[in-house]
Length: 69
Image (cartoon, rainbow, N blue to C red; front, side, top):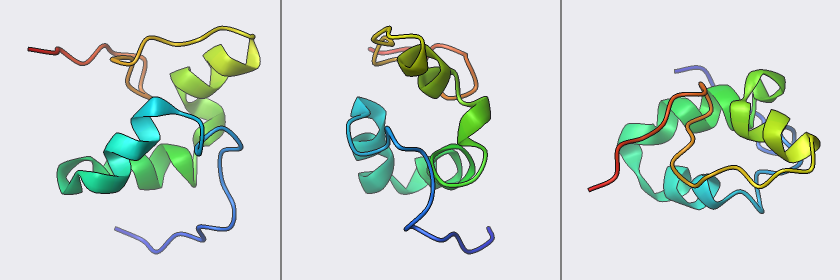
């Protein structure tokens, strides 16, 4: 995985409920690096928040829904 500049990235990452999950779950580091710091303009959560909506917690940045137990 490439290095990321954590001073740049999605303006919503600190208020996004999934960001905290990504920050603590090693297996989701890919999502965090790709969508929170790099391609955040492609993130389904980012787009939803820009539209003034509150995305469901299980909405992944790719637009798919995470299956919760």
